[in-house]
Image 1 (cartoon, one colour):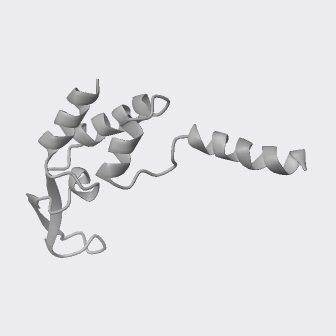
Image 2: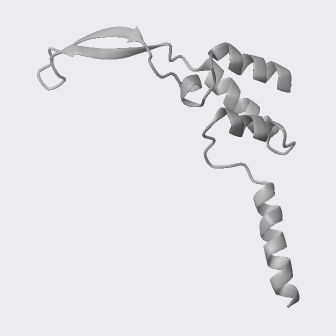
Length: 101
């Protein structure tokens, strides 16, 4: 009976101190920043999101890679990484980084 009680407790303790494999949203990052054991890694990921050079994207206008006559143009990226994670702007990411240091 003692084993039955201790194993779920160890599982809960282990899960509470591991960093998630995938962080999906802004709220996930805000939660991780509140956990001392996860704060450093969350800050590193937020810095990577802030530093991502994804302001523009390449759009194919005509042609293809097979025929080697592809014409492209650069357009503003409709879905940069900071937007995918739920931030309102790149500046919001920077503000959270600065507040969390």
